[in-house]
Image (cartoon, rainbow, N blue to C red):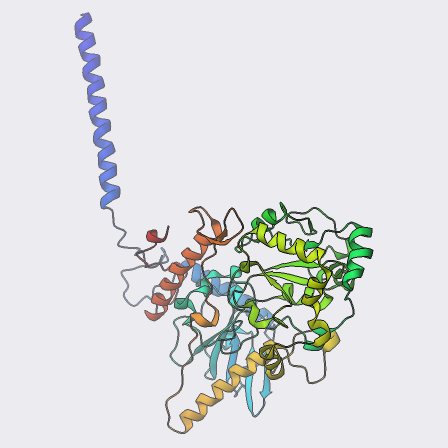
Length: 494
């Protein structure tokens, strides 16, 4: 009896084991062989659509919801705009930016109707959709794209705001973009009010004042760093950490903070443009002017501000920043040094040698010698927004950009009237394309390959493939590209 019961137990356990193995391999086989033919990988379609009806257009559910929300939002905000009397070419900000409900404006001898109202999307005079770069998204585009519609890109902010635009596959979809000097409408000097503003001596301190009255009396370091956008793609905080090992650095922002700003200067916007902040910076010999991303001609107030107050900027960001400096000896460029220690030794040398430091400040007395900078400022057709420099004929760079587009539209209309072919403008990687974010190595030299788990480099690579997929999607005239993914080589970059 005992042996029989033991045999039965073993037999039962064996059956359970065989059955379990069978179920396991059945599930594995199903998962491996399963192909989602009803919902292609190219785009996720609305599951509520009856696919047996060939005349029913595929429209993704999230697109339907998005368009309905935009329609309600637009109808409420722009309900007073009358589209029936619009006869000028229409330029529509698809990503709402200026807040303009709808207004015709003259651009020299040309005239266009500018609006943020999406109700004009299918108007017979609709010509150009304008996208604000930070808000440009493949999930929200005027698709399918019509042949007579141009797309224009306006992007004056950091590359980190939208890495999709760092890649030519995305840029080539637009007619023009801005920032770099190679672009159709460059605004590299958007943060530089004028040469007079740059050369002013309102806040300038002599070297002897900085030595006697400031450094010793107030206990300030020779170098200052003010950043509250921590751990950005440029890896600047890592470099500053290394620099701090070899020379004192006062850090006022939340990044690597070791010194407190006065309460009235704590606001990132108002505080950084306050005269008391300018005064504070002017007490320092060197200001770390490090951008949050590395890209040609990406130059912000971080460079111009210390130059204006009479300090020496220690610069990192645009690899071509020297092209825009007031003189050849007005700033120090971090990538010219072999390491953080090498830079620190040079800063200490200049800090102890007044005559050598004064050479870096000489341009303040002799004026800007950079002819390229003179040419750019003398020929730009817009002015930066600033209440103190505003004049009745002031045109900011947004309005100037709109008129730039308007004139191109009219150029094509004239070509059509003469029986000529129209010109299609396409941006390319030289207009804005920015390289993959890299790292500073252990010595402080930039260019180290990031680890696989680095957020910024991984995001840049992911957006590279998203740009390729977006281009493929738009060319295939699909009405929605939010979930389109067709790139096959994603894993090779990780």
